[in-house]
Length: 67
Image (cartoon, rainbow, N blue to C red; front, side, top):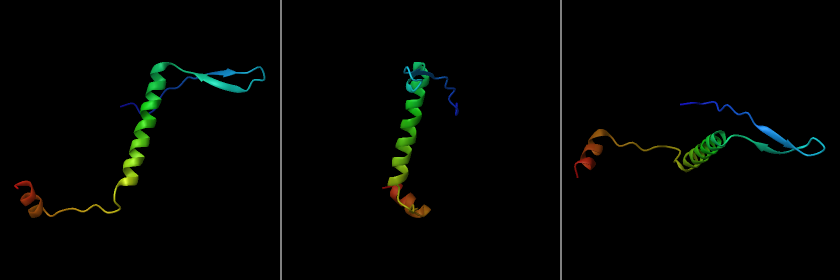
């Protein structure tokens, strides 16, 4: 799995030299979107997890499994 995205953006500038847009290849754009979605959904999961996780002992787990 690749962790660092190799981004080579080209900037669009107005007549004053102010950056107004960016151009990048579609593969890089799609990879950025995927990373952003992963971070977003990961943060939602983290926010909705309880502070403490309840664990059943093995006997309770086995009894529930065999029902």
